[in-house]
Amino acid sequence: MESLLALHFLPSWPLDLNPLACFGLVLFLAIVLGEIASRLLLPRISAYVATGVLLSFSRDVPQLDTLLPSAHVVFELAFALILFELGQRIDLGWLRRNPWLLATSLTESVLAFVAVGALMLLFDQPPILAVLIAALASSTGPAVILGVCKDSAARGQVTDRLALLSALGSCYSFVVLGVAYAWHHSETSAPLAVAIVHPVYLFLGSILLGGMAAWAVLRLLARIKPGYHNQPLAAVAIIIICVALARTLELSVVISLLFAGILSRSFDRQHRLQPMDFGLLSRLALIVVFIATGALLQPEQFLAAWLPAVGLLAARALAKGLGVFLFARPSGLSLRKASLLSIGLLPMSGAALLWVESTAAIWPELGAQLAAVVLTALLIMELLAPPALQFALTRADETGENT
Image (cartoon, rainbow, N blue to C red; front, side, top):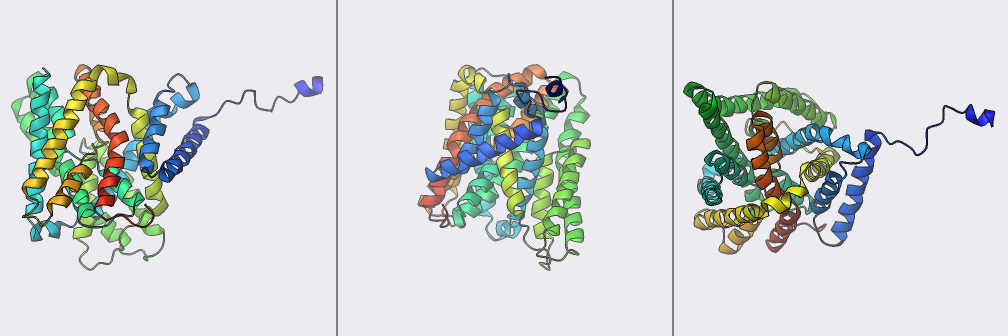
């Protein structure tokens, strides 16, 4: 007996799993559920979000609860990688050749903003809250677009327009959010000059930071031999630095990384830089983003805010569809594909999580009101939009053989 008691170096029972082991188990569960979903002809993304939602119910489990605070940081870094990769898929020359695409983008975003904002005012929401909700609802989720398109190996007219419209819509959305923040600051404590300078600083500063990141990518990676993993790894390092600088300088991570990807493609005139393929790293980032999205959502808010959230989604879908149909023919899109493109624009942006968190840190009461409606709508869309998007891409005959 004394010899057994002396084995104090053995772990205590039951085993106390550390956060790293919990993260591995959650990741493994998400991958398994994703494969089950794929066999049921559902997008893997839906399973990843469902895994995160299950994780959000485990706040009373100490080992799993420790993962939730770090989910914000992991989400932001993984989301930044996705934004950069999406930006690299955007060809600005396409807008010059077909300006009706820009008209489509502006119209569907503005109509969604106006429709959702007006609906929120009908629900007796304060004007600043209506503007914030409308701005967050006006953009399409780039992570969902990229994830489902990769999952189904989608290529074609609808796929390319989805990537373009989601990227441009994200930029519009965050510019409006910057203006709304400045407006609310001026109503509370900040002088008028600050209210005017703030959105200008946010937008131009974010573009400048994105341009600097693109310059660094081109200067550094053009000197690295293509075909090796050093290129994407060096790009990831620059992306992390860009995220850190955006946070330090109070700029938009979304705009900075989107423009870093867009400008790195636009400025690479000699085509020295291979198209950035992050491979498994990108897949891991997508899985982490959707697990974190589900984990950071709060399903308990659903009962309190389901009515305005459902109304938001209906108004948003109708407005975006109208914006697409108005310029479908001039932009070279058939009405059938315009209807499929409208379905593809349903996903909301997961970046809303970051804005809700930022708002709550500055104005706790406003942040709580914003979270109730926006996160409920986001929860619904994160579960329903991926199958709808996969359906649209399949009906457009743009998916690969591995769908």
